[in-house]
Length: 86
Image (cartoon, rainbow, N blue to C red; front, side, top):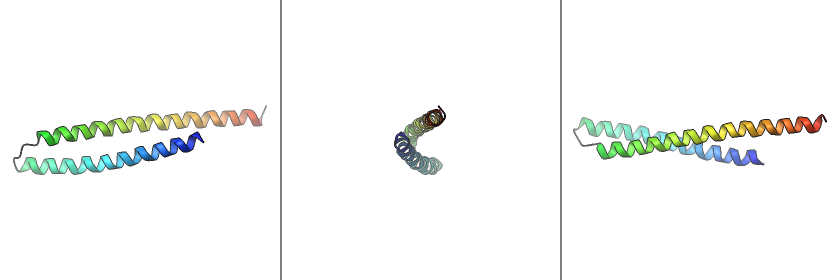
């Protein structure tokens, strides 16, 4: 049952990462286009950096969650092995 919850959280984080990846890519293109026109892009860059930090945080949380799933699955396997081979 815990694995299902982990799976749902992983899917949510993967969706967030996909969304942030798209926003970062689009933002970088828009910033570059505005910069090429000589526009002030400081506020856009600050927003882009905020999105980048959110992306990095989501990556860290996904890694932590994925590692937790591996540990829980290993513990369940060990417990099942112990129950089957007393």
